[in-house]
Length: 397
Ligand code: G3P
Ligand code: CA
Image (tube, rainbow, N blue to C red; front, side):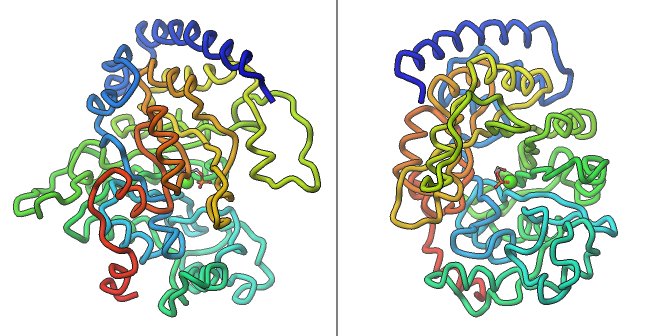
């Protein structure tokens, strides 16, 4: 564990490091539109004014795999509910099927949240990319939720399908609220060229550039993110994918996701996880190796025209176990948020579900959240949201 004194030292070091990074940005790294947005705000003070200079809503409500607390992740009711509640963005993890279709699915494999073991027993551990879309459409992506969360189970969730990107776009376009899409290139090393495929798919739907949709007659107060320049945000943990997105979709805002450890920010040495220690507790005591290690990722994001970063967070203890599965190392400590803001980078932490955690991180100055519970976050931000159960009924679930 790092002492308070060490933390102060890290913060002081961070301030010095960030000055160097502002200088690096000022000498013209990157040339895209997104990069220009980022550079315009490089010298803004940290805090909520940053979002007013970028094509992204302040206090952004990003529905992580849809409203995935109340409905099975990445399925039709999860995204429909997020839209109806008034989330700003529908978050999705992009993968590609064996026959080249783009789909919304998080895990590399299908075992956790589909019945692949029953439908394709001999291929139950095969990667998602080994299945055609027609094969994936045969899977039940909803029943697992009813078994895992009986208090939130609904008969109508049984048999829900994995969705294509096109189907998620249909949802985003299909109501009075028009949320944007916050798309992660998931395990992009498995999908060479997926950034170009995505560009073609977004262009085919008119989502690659400025919206041409008229909002005349739109309901007062409706979400209209899909009609603005921040209608799509790309996110990735992969530096290579961030670079590919910079080239392939230069005018689409990009966010670099931050992770501590293998493949991510260098971690300080720590004792191994004890048998009696929860994974959440283990993650919570992990620390960055140094402020330079963190700054190096901020620097990379900035140099490649990102408009923000998405750090992991640590969740406080709650009654239910749901949130703790998203509790990781705290990469949104105040000095870290300050460093990102000093570089003109928004901070959208993942994945936060409880008001006590919304409050803790908002106090630190974050610009929105990835959340499985958009209804709770909208309420926290004093934005009216209906009752999720009533909405699901109205939506036919
Ligand atoms: O995309 C932000 C957050 O979703 C990253 O974590 O694993 O849920 O995709 P994951
Ligand atoms: Ca994601």
